[in-house]
Structure formats: C-alpha cells, structure tokens
Length: 311
Picture 1 (cartoon, rainbow, N blue to C red):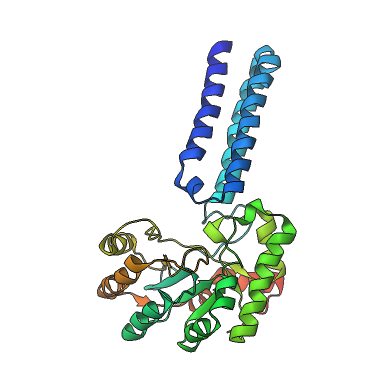
Picture 2 (cartoon, helix red, strand yellow):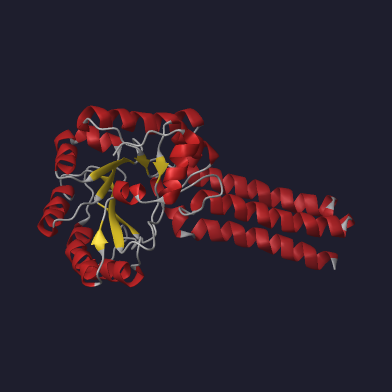
C-alpha cells in the first residue's frame, strides 16, 4: 500500500513537470521564466521524494491528505495565474453581456507600421470600431500611428511597456510597466487609459492590486483563434466564427510583443472574413469601453472602489 501511494505521488509530480514543460503556454515564456519554472519543479520533485520517504510513508492518512492538498494548491495557483478568465484574485472583464447581440474586436501588441495601417483601412471600410491594447515601447516608437488609431475612433488600452511575463517580475517592475505605458498614452494621445490587458493574460494578486490602485479594469478575452501561430487566414476566421457568441471579446494581434518586424499577414487577411461572417450572423461590433458601460459589475466596481471611469 505504501509503495502504491508513493508511486502515485511520484508519478503525479513527474506528469506535472512534463505537462508544464510541453504546454503551449510554456513555449511563449521568456528564457529566464522557463529556467525558474524548471528549477522550482525540480526542487519540488526532490522535496516530494525525500518528504515521502522520511515522513509520509510512516503516516499514511497524513500522507494522503498532504497529496490531495498539494494537488489542490497547484491547481489553484496554475489556474489563477495562467488562465486569462480566472477570477480567483479579482474581477476580470472577459465577456460582455450575453443579452447584447454584439462582439468586440481587440488587437494586441501594436502598433506596427506593417500591420496596423492595413487593419485600420479594413475597419474603416466596414465602419467598425475596435480596441487596441498597445505596448508602450511601440507607442513611443510609432507615435503618429498610435494617434491615427485614436483619431479613427478606436479605443486604446494599456498592454504594458515591454510585454514581459508580469508574474515573473518584482512588484516594483510590474508597477513601472503599467505606469510608464499609462504616461506614454496620456502624452501621445492625450487621453486617460483605464483598460489593461496583462501580457499573455498572466496575472497574480500583485497585478490585481496595482491595477486597482491605478484604476484599471483588467480585460481578457473569450474568443482566441491563436492567430500568432503559423495558420492560414481562413483557419483564423473559421475558429473565430465557430466560437462566436453574444458578448464575445475576440483576441487578434497587430504586432508581436512590441517587436519592430512583426508579421501578421494572415491576421490582416482574415479580418474581412471575420467581419463579414460576424455581420452575417446578426452581430454588431462594439469597443471594450462600450461593453463596459453596459456591464453591471463594472458599475459595482465604480461604487465599491470609487473609480472615476471616463466615457
């Protein structure tokens, strides 16, 4: 019996290690974060083995309870940090009101001269407004392009300054990433941003606390076609349209983590297909601020925290 429990516990740990190592989420992390995760998991594996052989094998009930508790804690942490829709540590706006027959188009990681102007032309052709979550260093690099997005009537949100994995940064650096981009948006566009999308959707209690202090609403998504992968425009559009539902927040990209030479050709090609398909299903398009203005919980946040949300 002891050997059976040990084997289950050890197998669980190994599977967890391999699962995180090969998850798509692991591929997008920076090198330092990958090393930290691997080291922590290796320490956990060694600790688990030693702890079991020294303690748990002697106290079977305690050992089983510890095993279950470990599973729950790991799930809690992984779900809270890595899943964009999770609200373990605070409210996330990831979906509009279901009663409203409308969706929101959002674009991350721009602006970029190669992709953003083409996207603006397509949106203007269909007379549609979208929301652009911009990277601070890209706004500073392409100031006039950021102004064009604003002048066209689109909403602009904060997507950090350099697109790091915020949960792997110190609290002071997280604050700098958000505040620096906030300052750049105010200087370049002359407006007060109040919507924030953490890079990759990763967040922890520190991210929530800083967002609350700076009066930001954290925005995620409900429809992600994974357009950053090497897939065709037709496939991107197909994924969006198959999953479309009232209140959807669709995540696309007009850049790549603030890099200069981001190639989003397939995303640009997919946009007319997505818009035509969405319109044919009877949906309207709204910006994130428009959706927030109709949301019950954001009104509750305003009352609870005393936020002054601009319109």
